[in-house]
Picture (tube, rainbow, N blue to C red):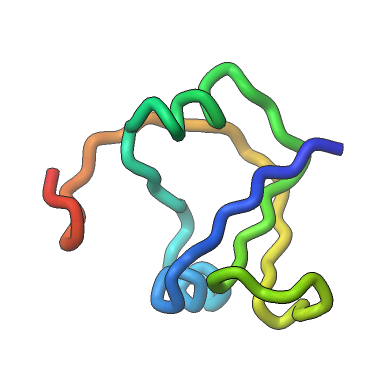
Length: 79
């Protein structure tokens, strides 16, 4: 089983957990292109920071639904 691990900041983790944020965005950099483009995963583990393995309250496990490239404007990164 292939797993993509994505550590998140608290505000984004809580928004995904609460259902108000439905997508996770990453900058289009060579680092993320290598990990996401032309790859398939079975699941994604979203973590609040870098929790201990047994800290299940800080982990969300969701199925991989694919990759979509979008252009957005973000308060931290701009367009």
